[in-house]
Image 1 (cartoon, helix red, strand yellow):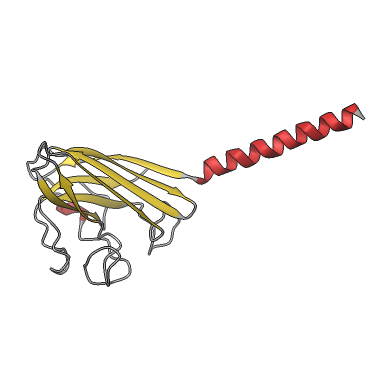
Image 2 (image 1 turned 120 degrees about the horizontal axis):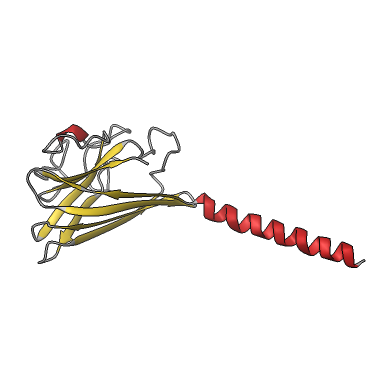
Length: 175
């Protein structure tokens, strides 16, 4: 009887352990570093964490001019051009007009604006179920795209880019 109870306890511990570990492995995470572009001194990091069907994006930047700046996902994971133009245009797999995230039509890459404080530091966070990390769905998968920070503010109107000015930082969204 003791052997059966001990076996049951061990089996229960193994099952619970596997279940706990599988939840942890369900989360996908990418950590990225920005490269300065267009003769700027902008630096920073970004992370994408996918869990329970939602992706949370956080970018933290320094070296910006105080005020509003736009950030977008662009078509290509190519940051080789000095001005960031090698990243292409906004990522727009659904062929919508450029706009403000969550309002009317917008590109899947139209993240939006954030504020840099008087020291040039800024942070932006967005959580969405419209992106995935490496899922293979061309309308949702952010892998192999570029992340661009702009010198100015996205006006959410000008087509196709929002008239946000020079590309001051770039990061490839790759593993």
